[in-house]
Image (tube, rainbow, N blue to C red; front, side, top):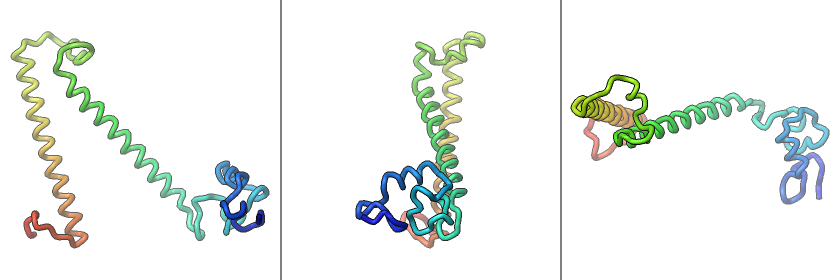
Length: 148
């Protein structure tokens, strides 16, 4: 088994000590400088002299932001679906204001539904425009899309 400066740990790959060294991020090359770069490459994000740590952190931040937005949208959708029942904690913010008659509540729900329908239509249109722009940029054509 070659425990030298090559791949290390034999035919199975790196040893546990080398993996621990990579995960811990130690800067000393004493326990396992195994790998092609040796001590010149202190980070797993450096490859051929290019540091990819910034792009990885940016992608991680974008993913976190997207996940947060997805969770917020799901929670909002859940509240909208369960908000019309009139039981439990649904609509507790409404109770702070003056009491509404059934007609006023129905009119407000109709207005909210109309606003939601307009927003969804605009969102679908924006998505269609983005899709068509991407397709044009990539040179794709579709039989279902009109010619530009």
